[in-house]
Length: 229
Ligand code: C5J
Image 1 (cartoon, helix red, strand yellow):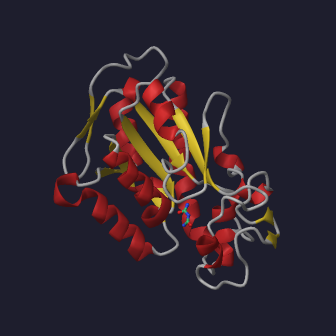
Image 2: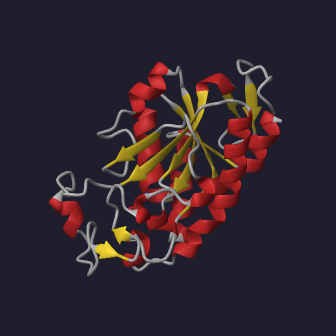
């Protein structure tokens, strides 16, 4: 696929519960929270007791989709979960939830955890945004809540989303549900999302595609790349 392709043609991807049809011009790639705080040792994910290496299998396939979207001149967006340095947008309930020793805003090896501007809050170097790709800073799990994501997609004529990133059952699932309620179709490539808990990854995907695709479609990055080729 290259920048001379017909971006308005209708493409079809093998998916569950049935093929996903999309026009590249109106289908954005949305990469959720591929941040150092979730994917590298010493960040928020690790502070909660998780094995961050479980998420790293997504980096290569997301990289392939990013390359294909960029080569075709299609829309790419990234999100980051995090808070203001003074923590004024951090709900006290979110800060204390889990009764963990290390909490959001505390100093860690990659700076203050999940705080904007700190090294750990930023996107991993392997998938770093390039010029022109909006980065949505979100205080919650869903990418639509308290952000301008919906306005940006609307202004660019985007109606469908390929949603990648971490974690499957938390920020990916919340964002897919929010998108569904706003009228977007979402396709989730199963190898481009991951969880610290593999059983919740499977459950998160099952919930999206159940009941005729109640929240969206599930496929694989290779099937998507074949459709674009
Ligand atoms: C979490 C996320 N798991 N990006 N955030 O707290 O899924």
